[in-house]
Image (cartoon, rainbow, N blue to C red):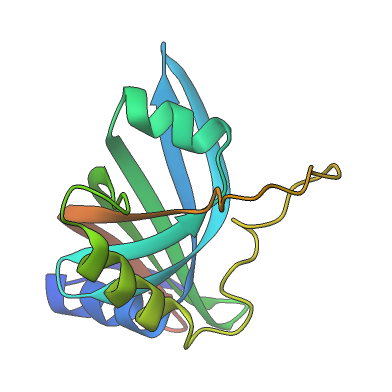
Length: 151
């Protein structure tokens, strides 16, 4: 097996083709990582969540990373790490059109509200929607790819 660095264009291709990432955030020196569905749009990844730990942590420290994999077989894979910044898309403050845009991209993904929209315990029914749309503004891509054979 041979492992090599991927070009920026290759990394962008893996990100564009995917829709599930592992989102890492950090607060007070403690890392936290969760799976999340995303929709790619240029230098932004749009996401959806309900309020909770990851949202609280990203609000306090907007620096995040996402890890996205593509598997072609046991010894053939690509793995991309995206670093960027969390930016919430509140309904107010002129972000309504961007929220609609995020929703329009995400709704094309199967089960796009999972896992961000599901909680492990029953929730109260509320008159107001608590869902949160946000984006990750991409700063950098890095990636590695493995394939069979020699370099």
